[in-house]
Amino acid sequence: MSIPAPKRDEVPLPTALAPMGAEAIRALWKQRRDFYAQAHLYEDIRIRVHRALSWMAAAEARGPDARDTQLLEWWAAAGSLFARWSDVLHAPLPIREATESFARQAIGWDRDGLLRALLPALRDRAAPMWTDPYLAAAAGMYGGSSADRLVPTDAAAFLGGALWRTGLTAQQLALGAATYGGAQNRIAVDRSAGLLQQLLPALLQVIIDHGYVDAWGPLCSPPRE
Image (cartoon, rainbow, N blue to C red; front, side, top):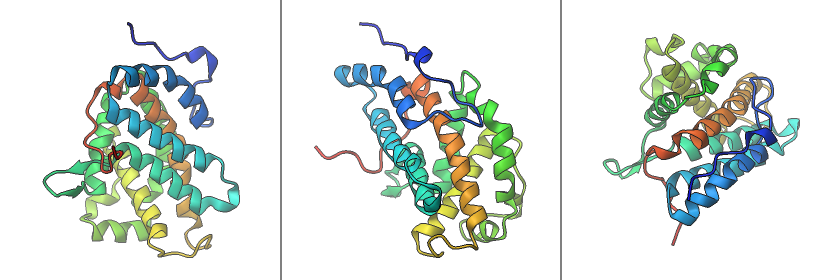
């Protein structure tokens, strides 16, 4: 039995301005997902994609007045893909290390240049993250240095750094370090949510088109038997 190819003529390809939505990506993935499930193949990546799409769909359903909640949902979708368990630490790999490793893998599987095509738009949105006072202070707390204020030219280093900094903003919300819907962090929240909204559809497409054969690290929370 041959592995079915996704039916791309039924859904539009994403662009920086109009990324593909969760349902469209799910439709592309369904044939392969079902085939792999029947053949007991690539279970971990099937779980990762399923979880990411569930959070992505929740974020897409939010209105503009729920941007904080939307960011946390986008961040959960991202974590579904990059988070990995460390048998050495007996804990999840630190987010900075996990996002850097994940970004290198994703760029390596970007056979169609989808991520690279998004880079100019992502750089425009994410560049201020490297000089944001709050993120600079938070980065210092988590092992950052003065070099962390320079936007990387390398694609994988840039994507990993952007994901890490987005996570610092999401963590601020998750730890209750800001008021829900507060004015002080609106720019940071909007910037982070917008970046993930552009980036996640492309990351998912790279994985379901090419990267599904790779090992993306042990799941932090495997499904219970």
